Length: 115
Image 1: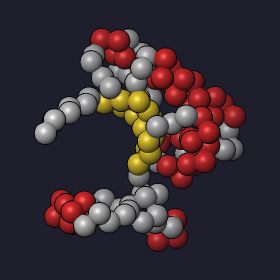
Image 2: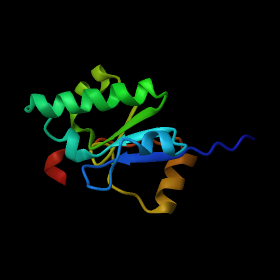
Image 3: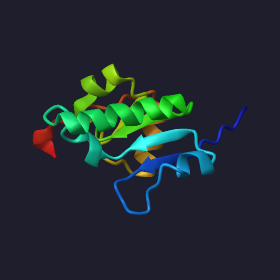
């Protein structure tokens, strides 16, 4: 058995966020916060920022995961590697998550009306 440990950095819009962290810390995954992704289909500037983040991460040989995956088609077209959030599943208690993995279950997409 091989144990893989990956480290991730969340790209926030915050004063302490710096692009320099991308080269200072040994990270494998760059996570795009949902504040960037939420309105990419309506706001061309937001879409440009998300596209640039994905391109930057890939140029640095990082995987990209997006939080808030309601815009999944756009994220796929732009090359986002993975997505997470309520779009796929509500947060699960640990025991339920383990049971899901053990049975080979699938996460079900949650409709917005049920949130």
